[in-house]
Length: 375
Image 1 (cartoon, one colour):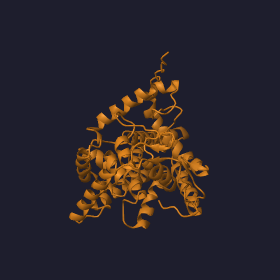
Image 2 (cartoon, rainbow, N blue to C red):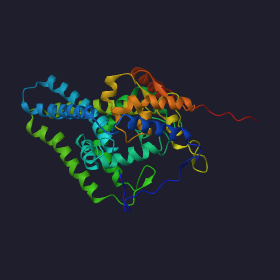
Image 3 (spheres, rainbow, N blue to C red):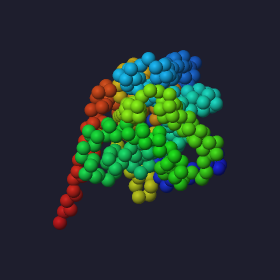
Image 4 (cartoon, helix red, strand yellow):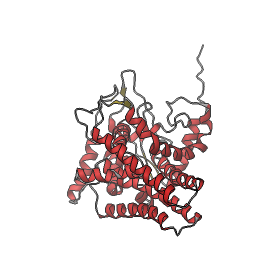
């Protein structure tokens, strides 16, 4: 996302240490050499195009099936799960890469494909602020990172967040609440965020009128195809429709929530806070290595579906590189991290990452030990 003079956000009073950044300089140089030596673009290739067609085709085709009239109740329920899974896939792969500018060197194509975020109920403009700018800059910093603010009253995702009694059971409830968080997101959150004087640590002087128009127009289209058309033209009762809607978004929400949190809210990662002078101990790149983890790097299925978000380390260091390249450049990043004695966190399998996230939620939900002052 590019800001104009009118809508450029003011910078919060938080900075990263100006320590030596030899690791980041070296890893950027090596990755650049890889693409140059192999005469490769950092953007999408045929694999990404095929994936986009499959995901978008599945989502649109499944939706249209409802209007053929041949599905019974159970078949329709299965179709709802497919819609939820495919919408999560679109968010992971197509929209995510496009909004980061990683899909294509053509900014207009990136903008158009970024609107697939709006297709599944979100908003690319708000997402570009909360995710691209805030989360990618202030990863795992409580009070700054928007990705830690998922039902904060019921889910504690940072060691620096206030612990409440309800958090004791969050290792059970969080997975369900992730689904409801997405329902809140597509129905209310984008309006809430864009009406605020600040989004996270940023104060937006003025939102572009074009983006406001796109927000209201695409939300109207979303409400029409997800609510109006099914209720008017399909033969399902209101309660059957409600079950179907919840099936779609609880499915999508749990998938999205779990995948994004498995990269940052797992064991062995840091949740740093700035010192009194507003400075984080590490420089930005080293901070990313301390707060980010990969998972299931050897799984083709996981990598294909989650859009390379299982290579979250590489994504944070190279957000403008299309995720289809992450499996290869991860070897470069891992080797460079080893040479410079920089941490490179990962969970070997998807199940390992789930367990680590579960344990972290459980640990964060325990009562904070009281400090005993020596007399």
